[in-house]
Length: 314
Image 1: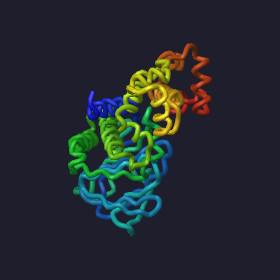
Image 2: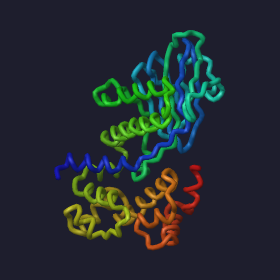
Image 3: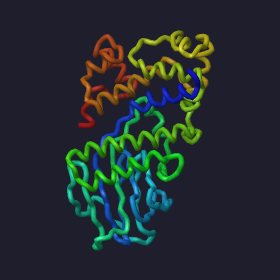
């Protein structure tokens, strides 16, 4: 298998573990002067797509980012921010606007007295979990700017246009379709960030780009429930046991089996919190001989019992 194909397989496998659950989506029509404040939402991500008009995004630390039609913005840490027409525009908390419900999780906000809005943007707040890639989330920047019309993100424009269409028409099942489209958009954004080297900030990405190590990582992600040995992982990489263990430790910073254990628990958290899988089923799929053994390992690595993860996203 060549390096390009392997990288593609590995990226696909990693992104399969990503989970997004939309908390609220908003279709927002604005007047010429507007200001919307979005509160900090730890554990969540914000996503905005400007369909028409112009706007500015003001971050918590005072950075002003101009937006034009076709721009999308991803805030993976859910930090507080504002979307404003200009720095001197009056600002109101987005939750204080009158809304029209379009479905269970989608609403319309109209902040314009004109029949022709100055700007239209689609906004989403969602719980964000990268599964096996969750360790990369702290490395993500506060703000990720995407120009859907650029060569790098050409595939996003039809998806974002479809999201606007779904938010505007209020058809049956639009909330579910919006959530799935958001899933795809976030996957494309995360893929682009990882392909660019995660701002050169992650040893994990260095390992993904190393053909021999990436074979072992792919094997771990494809079979997380297998009772891997260092020798078996070395064989996947085509290296001797000692060379593989040394290279893995030097590149990623932890031993191969330590990585395997942490990976199992990240996957377990996703299955418990987002997929609502029974604890005994998770234990079985991850290769534990008993639920008690799995629960002990889960609490040792995550600091909380598995039952807590099942309750936290109810």
